[in-house]
Length: 326
Image 1 (spheres, rainbow, N blue to C red):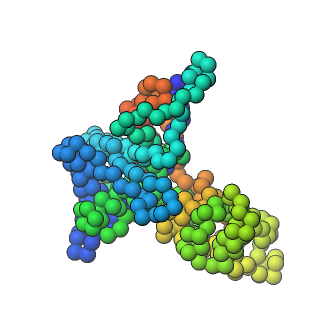
Image 2: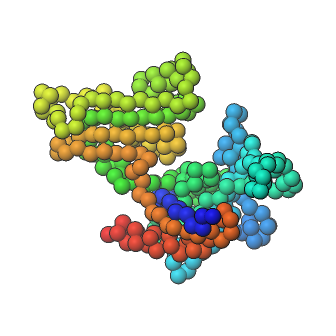
Image 3: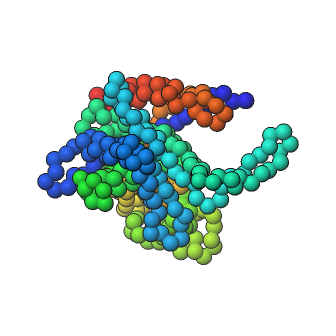
């Protein structure tokens, strides 16, 4: 029996834009949001449940709620858990003695939920979130959506926008400011998300991917585009740069920077590029995120020891912030 596992965390700033005339900082808005969440729990015995897919006809509900948000005065961090209520097909039970399968249909008033742990540092004016990577549970975009709704005109009326600014090993701004030519890029996306990408990343390339996907209907579509070998400088090729590829790549990067939801629609994006100073570099959307790892034991079968997890992650989180803040 496995008694420990490694949990990965990604980091992002949670940046709120207050309504005109409101001077609240992102930290202050976040604190108000958490107070509202906790008041609902303590005063009404309920949780604030929000459906991220509300109004979408062809998608299952994506109901989210913050299950807990406790403040550690010593660490100056919030310890939070966000839940995603499972919709559609539910799992079955397996008898480990004979491996027979039983339907899991006697839930009565209960639902199955996927839980993601996340911690928020509020030492500065802008909250920094350390979020567990959980492929089955709530993700960064879900947390962004949840706090956007709580702070918006629909509830607290103190913020007109909320953005999760993901910490990357190589910031997108750095690539956009320094890129002079494209050596190679790889892009992979699911056909059912290409319509959205076509609207957000305007240009013929994504539109052509969308048309191709509609023609042959693959499970996913991956394009590898090569322009020149690494080590061969533009000046060796008579100063020629592929301006069309450069424009497309900048559109993709700018769209990702503007809207994190696009990163969910792109399964993979890798770029090899030349900088203005002639050096070459690689940007990877999935593997380029700042990451913290912690080994954690299980309290019971399949259930993490969340106290131990916080203690281990908080230390690594603090070390990272110390370097990040200079």
